[in-house]
Picture 1 (cartoon, rainbow, N blue to C red):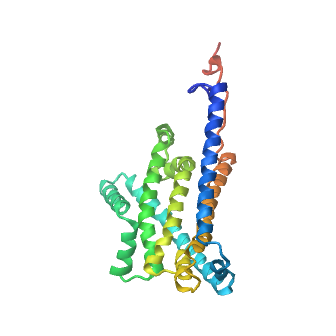
Picture 2: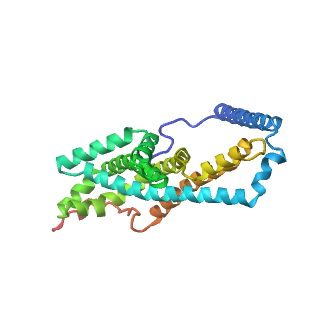
Picture 3: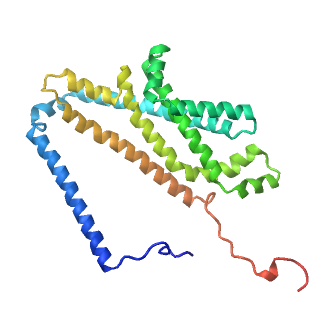
Length: 285
């Protein structure tokens, strides 16, 4: 076993006191900032009952729930299609056929460089596509191209000897990818995949720009169309924690899957005791 302290010095008493002081100072600054923001909200009458009363109406609650459902529907379609497109483009970039590899590279670089909002607007306005398919298509093209690079990098991160050993056993390239490289690369790719899916979830809010009735669009309707002195800040305080909670739920799911993979007997590494020198070769001693 390697010593975990080999690359740095163990902090002494003075360093520990200094770190404690830094931590306390940071906590005080954060609490002061939060208190200042709350003071401004109270001072601007953002917590008065008249601005929060719209959320007590059943119609407003149903509007928010419908918008949340539309957001989750767009995210579900975009995430599945992005993973599929990313796998296809990554396979093309890893192909031995030069033409297929060049085409896949061109598509990945083009869609990854294009702003996702530009693609959504182009599909919605120029191609006359409905709001939901336009939003899903734009998210799929962008996130799929990014995930293609994640997949390709994850495959290349696996030790070369793993693939060479599989080829030496007579396995075909498809079998090497399916049974050797991909299962090992998934665990390394999982954090980046979940991170990109979080980006896709947040980017569903761009749907309100093309009149797709998602969660942010529902909040905009509440804030702009009700005669309650424009309850914009209460709408933000309601919608933002839900977006943050969904992103945190995705991160928790990624952590759970990673731990499950590490405990799985199919992926758990097996420690083998090194053989004694005299037992390496058969024959008389």
